[in-house]
Image (cartoon, rainbow over all chains, first blue to last red; front, side, top):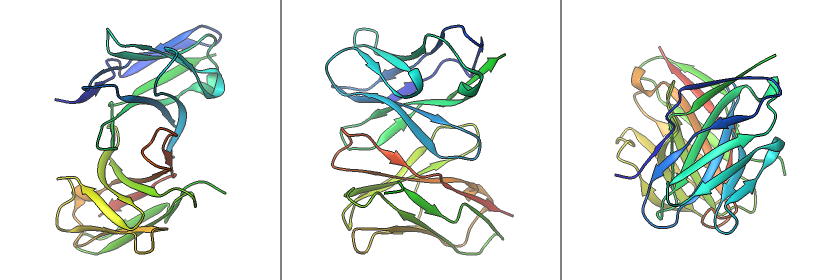
Length: 112
Length: 114
């Protein structure tokens, strides 16, 4: 079955420390991969995407993600976390039928 | 261009009433998508349009749900005879073509059925 997994419900990190939010997927072929962020009672804001090419993708607000085909992973990273990064993060995969399937989300909490 | 616009932002309705939501996509985007997000979950696909044609409907979309995009611009999502289980955030997104350029989401309409 096609699926996206975000194994951590919550990630806690101190401000200034690096952060990683994990995502693995089970989709056939060469899918498009996305990360979105959601603030309370808001829609989804696009962070970055991987379509093809360089496995390290840079996105908005200093975030980046590393695509690993052999491990079917697309982990989100940031070298130095900010308190304002605290939010809900979703990994998503585009299916060939042009719809997205999302993980269940990871809540990132950055402590001062 | 102000992005994807959804109205209303919040809707509280009594069980059994009908509700309609509107989505205005980015003007040059030919594809429009509806997703539903319940508390603690990621968004789930409901349906999508290319121009005015509805290309796919999820099994989640019962007969009480109907979506239209009559002129290939804005879209409406109607829920008839609402049930408490319909309470969720309804998200609209648009894209130019098949998503390689990304999908832009609106701020959503939060529906509460009481």
